[in-house]
Length: 318
Image (cartoon, rainbow, N blue to C red):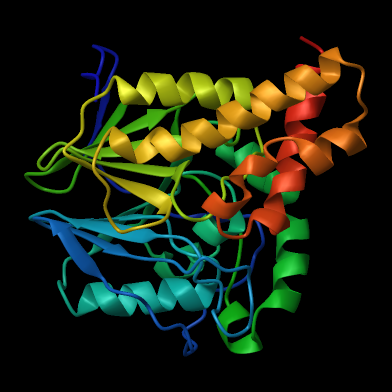
C-alpha cells in the first residue's frame, strides 16, 4: 500500500459517541447466526467468512466477510454483517478471543450486508468510521434497506438492526491506533460504490478491500465500471502480504486475487461498448454481454443483468 501523505491524521484521542439515524435502541437479543470462523489469517487479524447467498432468515444476513484486528489496548472491527444478529454473533466471537474494548467499527461501504450489524457495537467509547460520503448514502437508502431486509430476516436477527452514521468521516488517509498497532483508512474514488474505503494493518501488511474485491460471488456494480477498473489498477500497484475480500475466502494472495474480477469487469465493458457502437438496445446487452463469464461466478443470474444495465447507462455517454 502507498505510504500516507503528510496530511495523514492520527486518531488517538477521546472517542466520539455513535449517532443513530434510525433511533432504534441497542438490542441485547439472541441470534441464530452461525459464523464460519473466526480464522486468524495473520497475528491478531481475524476473519469470519460470509456465505455466498442472498439474505434469508436461515443465514441471518451473514453473507459478507466480517473481520477484526486486536491491538494492545483495543479492537477494530471491519464490517459487521447484514443484521444485528450478525453483529451480536461477531461480538460474542471477539469476546472469546479478547476482553479489550471494541473502540472502532469500520464500514467499508454502505451496503446492508456490511453495516447492519453495527448496532451490536454501540457504546460510549465506540467510534464508527467510514468514507466521507457514507453518511449521505446511508441517509438516502437506509429506510428502504431496513424495510426490505426486515422481510428477508428472522425477527430474532433483525431485532436491533439500525442505520448508524459514521462519527469518523474519512476523506484522506487516516491512521487509527489500537495500541502498538496502526490501521490506515483510505477513501477511494467511485468504484463499487461512491463510498468505498480500504483498511491496511501496518503490523502485518494485511489489506481489507471490502467489496472492491469479490471472489466466487459475482461482483455487484453500484458505482462506476470505469472507476472500478481504474481503482483496481491502482490497488494492484499497492503491495500487500495478503488481502481480505468483501466476499470470498478469509484471505487471498495479492495481486493475483483481483485477476478474475478484473476479467469480469473488462468483459462487461468491452461487450457493452461493442453493443452500443452497433446500435443494440439495453435489453440486448443485458441478455448477451459477458455471458461467457456465467460459469465462473456464483449468483450470476441474481446480479449480472443489473451490472450490465449499470455499465450500459454509464458507457453510452462516453
